[in-house]
Amino acid sequence: MTVRTHKGLVLWLALAARLLLAGVWLYAGASKVTNLPASVRAVHAYQLIPNGAGEVVGAALPFAEIMLGLLLLVGFGQRAAAIASGALLTIFVVAMAAAWTRGLRIDCGCFGSGGALAAGQSPRYLGEIARDLGLLAGSALLAAWPYTRFSIDRRCDE
Image 1 (cartoon, rainbow, N blue to C red):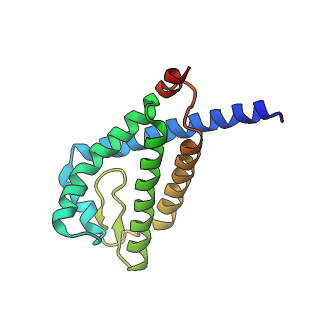
Image 2: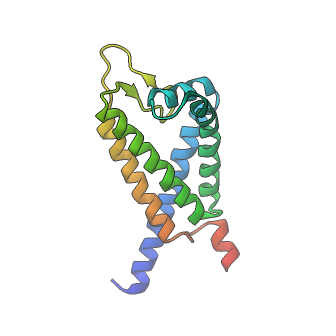
């Protein structure tokens, strides 16, 4: 494989990561933005931050996710968006791991509702953490190669 082919492949992979992350963030934000009390409840379920801060985080999170998704979708500020995406995913992984190790039985709230699980339901921490680690890898790839095909950033540099 030549250097040029290798670089072309990486750019296509970075584009795929960008579009996947955009879709995930847009879906996650859209699933919460219409029910902010549920988003706040999901944040409180982790029992990691004080109630007042949880209210702010829970209400702001869907809008931050939608903003990240839009930036990634159009390819504007890709490196910054990828770094922000990676930071948010790291926080989510740490929060889920903390909930798991403390024996909390909660839904992650990643795509809506969240909060305490009903009797008979089991948390899916391992799968959720694995998913977020995969998305984190995509964020890292995009942060390293941010000028992907079909992006505003790339058009501005040409």
